[in-house]
Image (tube, rainbow, N blue to C red; front, side, top):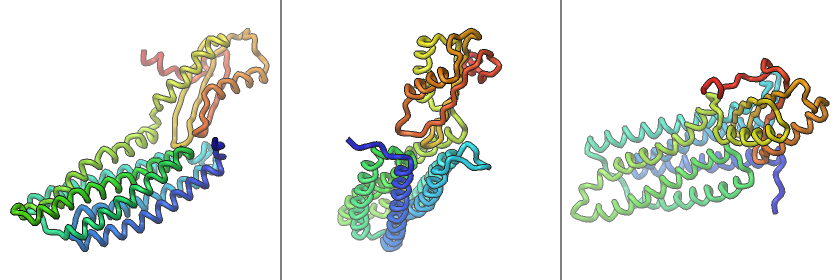
Amino acid sequence: MQRNLTIEERAQLEQRLLWQSAGLMFIIALAATWFGIMTNSQAILIDGIFSFVAVVIKCLMIMTSKLTTRESSAKFQFGYWQFEPLVLMAEGGFTLIIVIYALINGLVSIFNGGHHMDFGLAIVYAVIFTAANSGYYWYVHQVNKRLRSSLIHFDNMSWLVDAALAGSLFVSFVVAYFVERTQYGYLSVYVDPLILVLLALSMLPIALKILVPAVKQVLGMAPLKLHEQVHGVMDEFMKRYRFKDYVSSVQRYGKIEFVEIDILIDKNYPVQQVEDLDRIRDEIDAALGGKSVQKWLTITFTTTKRWMAKDYESEED
């Protein structure tokens, strides 16, 4: 059984994977651009553009990973965790822009009569990069099972997208290569723009899968799963220690969960010593768990509702 990684080990492994990913993606971006020009394939060129954007995003992720290892500063007294969803939002936004561009470009090319391309060289490109992208995606996926980094998870999605693109291009180019040598060869000019349109449509859900969760975190929307987990734990503690009421607030930024719980107790509550209340805090902390992420937990006890956070649930009711 493998031991859990320390915070320092997690940060080092995360940054090493991001640097490795950025370097390999840059090589792929250069190669895809060259193949796109040589084969006259817009679909391969789009793959190259997507890879160049991915390199920029990966560099931003490396900077973010380094920032999040610093707990706080005078200007950012709660830490730098909010930069992580900002970078992911940028990645999702850029990916969405590329998808829209590819879709429009493909449709325009189809209506303009398509264009010829070198399917033989394009097949070579597709074979090499399907294998390379798939292999690296699988390797990082296995490593991240232990690391459990959201940055690595979303970064690795770019490799999955590239693998899917290259695989789709391989199948399409092989079919087009043989069609070109039949009586329907005149249709081969539409293969590349049609592939471009289909790739754009297939990439749209992936772009939204990155963008939507990041936007939710930037906007400060409470993660439902964490909200329900805290309520489940606190409902049990309400019965065990006979608290009068509680209000919880939760948020998540990348690897860190923010949990604030205000507990209302009677003025003559039997537990009055600070060390006894600390023991209850420790029990709640243990019940909430959180080994895979860092947790910013604040638990307060009060006999006056004025010192509790506003109860959003009672207002919604």
